[in-house]
Length: 139
Length: 139
Length: 139
Length: 139
Image 1 (tube, helix red, strand yellow):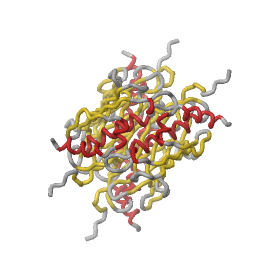
Image 2: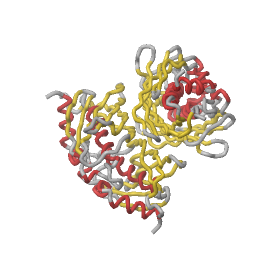
Image 3: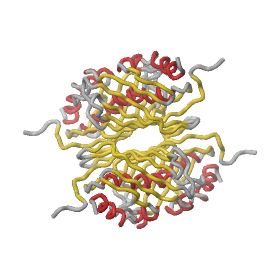
Image 4: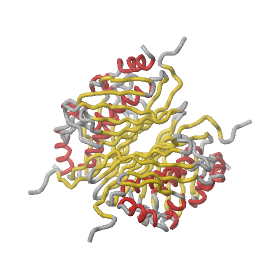
């Protein structure tokens, strides 16, 4: 198994919330991640549409997996999201990351979320701080 | 019951996700909201700390309630969050809103989330678009 | 002259600051704008690199032109920028917009700034509110 | 002279753009900065109001000075600004910083800009990366 997959397997195995969300990893590679989830009734809010926290959480997981996939632990420091289309129960959301910039200390990702009709429903920008800790240190 | 409470009661009654989060409304008034939740194991991620989506979702609910409490429907258009301290299972998070600006069309809120030790764990900024629809139209 | 050009000509004719910046319009169309400027000594800061305000100002002008080019007046409500590479005096910066979303009331643009070596030096996201006022009202 | 003043004197002495803006340092201390400028005709845009880049540039200088005043070099990595009231030529703008969070590697500042009538005209949030370089290394 390559390093990106090993890291994300380890991350997701302990990630109870991503499991509750039903997040499925479609693709993972160094600096790249594609995730999917299906919106359930219990993810909706008082407007009868998905709570904004659902798309954010999917994007935030996508950011974490993309940024950690090179084997160096990274933590989110600043994120923003614009919700551009309504999401309803039953929708299938796909988050796809793009690595915009990566230096030794920080990295920047742009994540687009689309629904099953290829409509873009949210746009997310996230900056991470790259620690120097490795996920699987060589002895 | 005043209008702010009526609106938020109506919003939260249909808000399955805020209910799953265990969100409790501590205070609500026109342009102001204070919410609380207790972090549970199922809200944590692969770093053994609360998923970033939990604090975001709490802040986003706080934004929605504060911005709708005047009886005019408002929808979030752009939000950002900085996660500044770790959150672990068992922590009690309190989100408090501040109305920074309000015009006829848009409004801006700043939301601070603290834990049970009064430590600030996240800082959130949210802009809403104010529709002209009323929550309880006069006939 | 098409509407997009007419609008931007009108906007830039009164835009003293864009003129000070030396902004040149490379392309303009409904929802799209491409601008350029050359960084001068007087645009640099105490780190001997361009002040962050220069790239922001270029992006903000690009946002304004792209968002107004359809003839309906739009005003910026929330913008963010990540500075990803250093900019020095003599650099030639090109800002290119992408319309991410447009509804009757708001629109979202993503703007990338590159230097003369095609390196991306800043990433900008901007949300505008669309008023209903026309730039050239029909009588 | 204390360290904060020494650092900001050094920064501003080479900061041609802050000088063009006419930025005046009202107060400076570790993690805190208060700046002022007077809006001139040449800072306005095609809407006959101050270009959004002016308030941004003032806030960005305020961020840089506040974040560097402890003597450790810090660079901006992500900033956002909401323009909440119009600014016109002749207005006097005051930017005041608040240090929201500071760790060994990053820090977060919130900056409010008011005009001469105490009206808040912009709200800015900025994250910096703290290098380990000192402004005045001990030999």
